[in-house]
Length: 115
Image 1 (tube, rainbow, N blue to C red):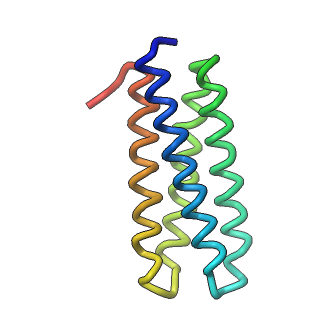
Image 2: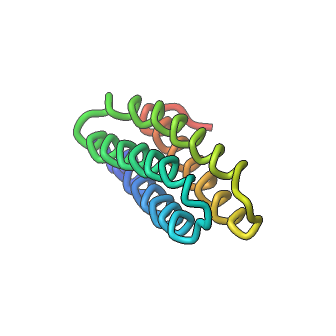
């Protein structure tokens, strides 16, 4: 793997860790306990993306797993965002989406597709 692709994956991992930290903050400050299963599912999906991204250094086929998982994670975050009871967390959800867009773009960049 060339240095450009390594840098794209490194940046993706940083962005995913930002998502992880933000999701932890959202989860810890949530006032509605019944949202907990959705938060746990979101964390599991994010862990799968991180794992697949790390595998991508050695096996570019893992990138396809990342791209698919980003969609699943994004839809779970969209559900949590749309059903959140306070607007104070809106910037946190937006931060997750911004980081996901970077990861998604970087994954396609490693595959040779860029805008």
